Length: 315
Ligand SMILES: [Zn+2]
Picture 1 (cartoon, rainbow, N blue to C red):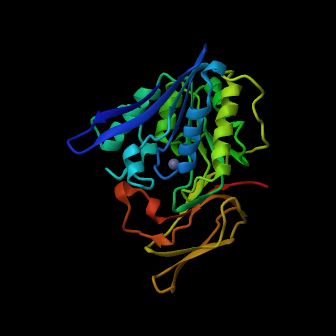
Picture 2: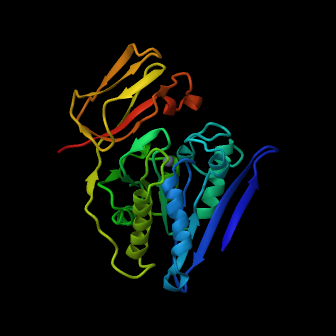
Picture 3: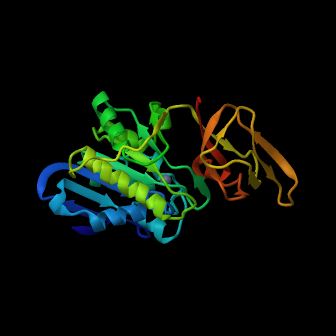
């Protein structure tokens, strides 16, 4: 069944979400796959479409719910990251406040759709302005049982790293809300610069298929590609002023303590700031867009001053 839900927020805006439900021929759990929370993260959206088009109900135990584009309004505007309606970050909001801002309304509606799930995978990527090395963050905030189920969902993704996240402060509010509600969940970061490459689409697609095999909803042995578990300190390098960003690193690179990371210049090319790695770290993603706008920090978000997102690693 395919349906586009629509809820009116105010006179000018509504929230719309396309939802496909695939009912298997045998009983089993409810497994939800979402993508397009951030509207330019296309590799996940196209993988979600492929899942809708290819999963055979005859071979399925249980029910799969797929929401290919969570933020449809933003998608139709070719928007990046922060909501085009209220400039909020959808990932950081908890459900439960539908009378709040547009994004809070949206996240509340999303949660209504997914709260009966037994498992959930949310697919993200690098936006148009970001080069990203694929990895799978796993929020570890619920019971041991939920945590180990969440980890098992990540095991079939052909990525170099899975990130075990134990610090609730560093986990997006929506993931915490789902884990507290008893839903094992992960989110996947696979895709870069808003380009839906066949490779990234297939990592997302095959990862979900493996997860469905892992929980017994599809038959067969799940893929178990080689992955490394990381759980270091996450941090971001930000510009301290507006300017033009010249990165000297690549996504997936491990930088050493004190290594030169890049510099910020003014509009003429004269240097303003230089950046160095404080610790040995893996570059998860960096902003490839040279345009850095220090004045654009809606609600205090640092997305428009972000330069590099890293995690400390030991070798
Ligand atoms: Zn995202």
